[in-house]
Image 1 (spheres, rainbow, N blue to C red):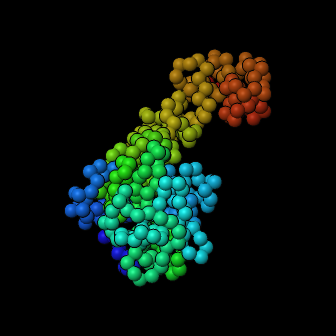
Image 2 (image 1 turned 135 degrees about the vertical axis):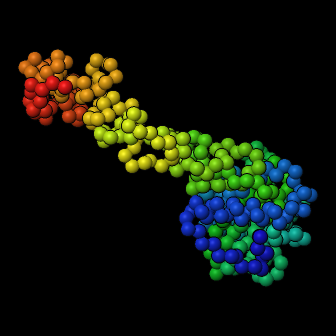
Length: 355
């Protein structure tokens, strides 16, 4: 339940950032249930975007992009700016305003109770907040809720709310939650997400999201977010729960399906992303296949049998020295990318051998 302006916040002790984000969203989904009667009379769209954040004040904030910076010049399209080294003062971009406590028509942002409507009928202002015990006053050592209006990228006015945790002094403050109504000119209730389910950011665009990348509550589809929280690597589209890993028995970084395949998100020991090893029993990082028959040369020919006559002998020597210093596969018997004396040693050691 949303804390009243006079109540102290319940301590939150997340074991990880991911658990924290999931806990915050779950809490607000439960909170929405407590306002069922009010919601029925409010917005019918419920296109609310809710995001747990960690924005230390002072901060210039773009509500839509969640970009944060120490100055407006570094945050394109910033909307709200809580600042000041000695107080909590709100400075707002054109068209933006902080909702005053209901019934108050002067001053700055009020500390709002859960369920307060933030919409066109409210009174908005800016400036320093008042710390005290009266209704609407901001509280130390507690959670404070604020409402705001801003002009979104569509050029229209939207309404939102946020939560700011204040410490022992008014200069110890962090915004931990932001929510806004995506339908212009539509009121939103403080603390409410309208029961919208959690959506997880999908940074790599593979269709799988991760709470560590970002969590919002959204009743409508939001670009860049998905309903699942199953991606173990949200920076690589090739790695997700549908990823096939191939067993790499020879340790050359290339696996083969014939040796085993596992489909899972995290990389299993002994398995790699790359498949199709043309000689899975002998390490061959360059996958040389001089006759293009699909079988790696190291499996088909003795190492050093450059003319492919079935034996390493004197007829291979001229071919070897013609390739000396090159980066091609012919003659590069140790697969280090260049034909040199190390490869000639391998050829001599294999003298007279056959596959």
